[in-house]
Image (cartoon, rainbow, N blue to C red; front, side, top):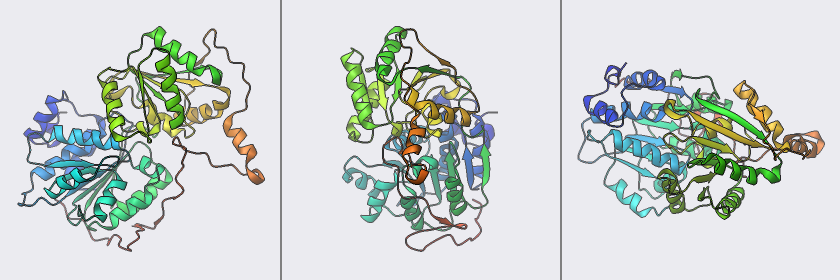
Length: 434
């Protein structure tokens, strides 16, 4: 099957082929025809399988086939959880729309809003945004949602994990009731299903791989090591393997900074990327990593969904995530588009419970080994068990997320209607086919 067979225009097919793609991926084959029919969709696929093109291409076709008035009202909105993912999605939109008459823009926090407001005033057809900055711009009356035809939630599960439930509800309350809704996510928790029930109308479900599955060509390896020996082992692995492009994940921002300093001190070029870094610093670090100016990029889970690095050979979990699904998102940065990749985890005694939870959702045992000279001697109890034992009245304590600030607000959805602060919800009116 070709992209032409999916019903895409010659202009879009030409742009896709110039990117080097001739055969649609499984998620693209299943999602594109459904979206072109104007139906709502609930799509799940492992990372690196072409989800972005799966919604970008049919939406660009819809926009290009619609007559443009002199003033371009915003008609398609793509919401993403992180700045990096927003920038990545917008890059794809620009590349695929080079031969069609569609204007796009991206807005996110961390940079001044003035230039973003100026761009929006000139009129755009499709906007990629993070929820927080978009709400700010709406409050400033710099953007209107009155003409939204299509709403796309990309990595919806991560948005809920990061505490964006209220922002999503508020944004949706400003939009027309009649619109097409597309929800793409790597996993679907109960909260995501509630969100979908409140937004999507008779959605077509598309799933190309079991939930929490990883790319087939990614090999998994665990090194058991004492906590205090992790940095030394990491440096040895990098130097002995002569690795030139490695993405390393830590659980905290402070840990990312500290590890980066130690790597640089050991003569290994490295940079950190996390939420406390300015947008300029994050963009620079990612650029230097992509063009191989630095060998190691140390990141918190903020980077797990928003980094698109072709042929990234190695992902290392310096610390295992305490949310097992995040393991899938982290290692999804390697083994993309059918390429081979290696996921290595450095696991100390405190993290054994995390490893058990990860193996449970993957439904496989991770290959575990001990490197000579790094035999573990620490017998500290698993952190999850230790946390539970400290909880009051025997109750399990809530674990923090990778950023150390598990969002307090849980999503609230009543029935099939999204709860909003303005009281405006879906009318239930039938959707017209485009």
